[in-house]
Amino acid sequence: MSTNMKPPGRLLGGLLYARGRLSDWLDLHGPALRNIGWSAAGGVIGAAIGLLFVTAWLRWR
Image 1 (spheres, one colour):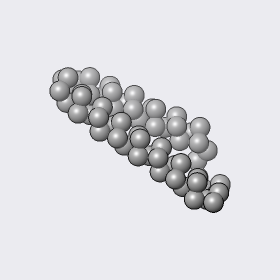
Image 2: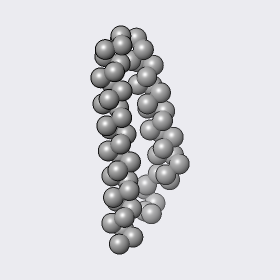
Image 3: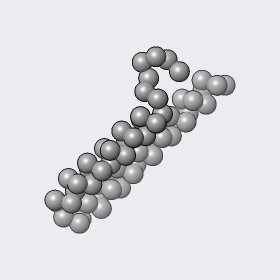
């Protein structure tokens, strides 16, 4: 792991914090927007985790 990368625990903590902040913001904007937002947030978080695993796999390969 290079020195400028965050440890995985900090990365996951940052993602969970961002998801909590997004949830707080979406609570103010109605259920329809909230459902769309959760779908988008789930996609972004899934893509970030997938990219993390692919990057790790390519490094160890």
